[in-house]
Image (cartoon, rainbow, N blue to C red; front, side):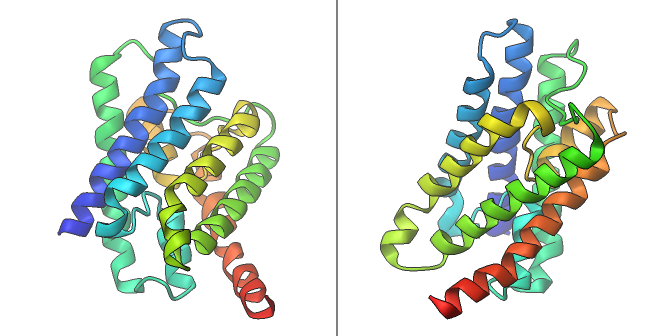
Length: 214
């Protein structure tokens, strides 16, 4: 239960701060800025990893939990409850933002700025590289583990910085599902549910290959 609570709280924090930054940027007509939104996502991911990492691993992302299970770094039997906890935390965060900002239409939902294929490919690539970083810093020496939050948060912020205006740079099905469900904007949701999972899963054999040949 401690692990599931940690995943709930960590994902709540991620979605509340990250999508909250998007909402507040819209409410203040650019007061946060795009760079501020990207930095917020990176910092909240880093903070939640250092807060909950030793309790649950701080996956905060169904795609990460699935990839860890495929890579045999996490029991498959725990994946469903982790995903339930992550989605519940994300929806609770979006519901809170709805209460705070009832006039906001999207609540930070991820929507393609171009074609669906373009955003799908971007989400696939972004999550692929994010998962490679996670594999290499979350499972290694003690020194690597100490810098895991910083490295993962930096990648999230970096990818959100350059790809956010086009695809939203979700890399996380729970992060996209929650605002889409609460706001009712479900048309493009499939992109953000499927592409990150495939991208994270694809990183598994690549990570194994690099690890064996290193």
